[in-house]
Length: 430
Ligand code: UGA
Image (cartoon, rainbow, N blue to C red; front, side, top):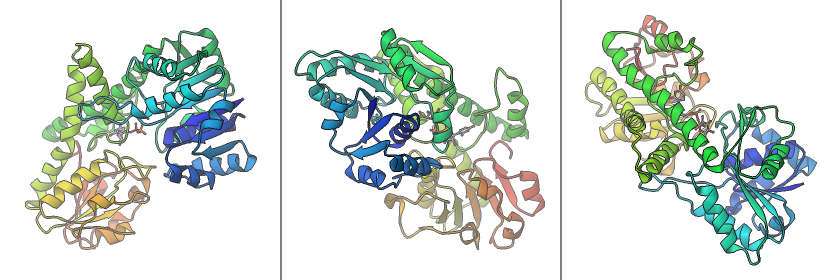
């Protein structure tokens, strides 16, 4: 069976490679020609551990190809995965223009039955809209199905998550289409859940919003912990043993970022408002997240006093470890605030690069943690890269002008850091 994947960003590329590994002949298409030619050469246009090996292996086996002219591929593919972006608009709603362009192109070029599988995260009701857009674009009436099949993989863990999903959700009213999608994942051992398309669409938003809620709950509680001298890390361990709560996503820090949580929570809020519903709890989740890095900055200022002309080492740019993705990264928000207050910044990240928009005389990206720290007045940890925990912190204490560490991800052992002579602050572990 030939499969076309439209949109080869991080979800599309991972999906295409998973399907190729499962034995299908896959074509990846994108309007971004530089992305397509990089992938065709075996170069990933983004950082994702393990994905480049899969790419090389599948290119070599001839199971995958990448193109920027999709017309032939549409005609020769029985199944088409839609993996294009759905960025946020100013009002929080998801922008469906890339979805509409993709499905209109498919509708106008199809010459026989097609199964469309929607992986992009889309508002409830999009499957219906897509069905309408395809029908409108068709030159003659041809049968097709549109199935919602949301993606749950995490950046930095994409390969593992793709091969070991917690569940596969198939949103369709057609049992034949559900069977066909299930067959595509034939070798994946996972629970399968067949729902209506709207339910599948909501499951995706509800999952991300629930995880964001866990994080904001812990972040708000962390502020209380600072007041009453209780460790949020110990509280997280204590509640996490309860299987009903679970151990994951209880890590307090400077807030969630990335291309998914902020966008999807806002989109869900927009959907609710559109339907006359009020998701007050979720509004508070956003509020806590948007103020958490400010709260962190206040702790820094309380200790350092004025930030003007202070040398600050920022460790970690990426929105989380294991990726070079800077979308909605809290590091960038903190850096811009620190620069406004007159700080001189040295940044380090093992893979992410400072974007052009943040480059200026007062901020410099350095190659090693040691270079960032030497002579600094404070260190701020924005991303919990494991290599930062493995650094020789006992030796850095002498290298700093003022040995203060503000740990925005509670990565380091505060008791040990204090014993080595640092002023150490970890969120909710004050
Ligand atoms: C998230 C979901 O976890 C995936 O299931 C989903 O498929 C994906 O969005 C998506 O919709 O495409 P991702 O954005 O890659 O995945 O990253 P996460 O690991 O979920 O982390 C998101 C943010 O939450 C990061 O900034 C991270 O630092 C923060 N976080 C996470 C915390 O602050 N505390 C935690 O305990 C966990």
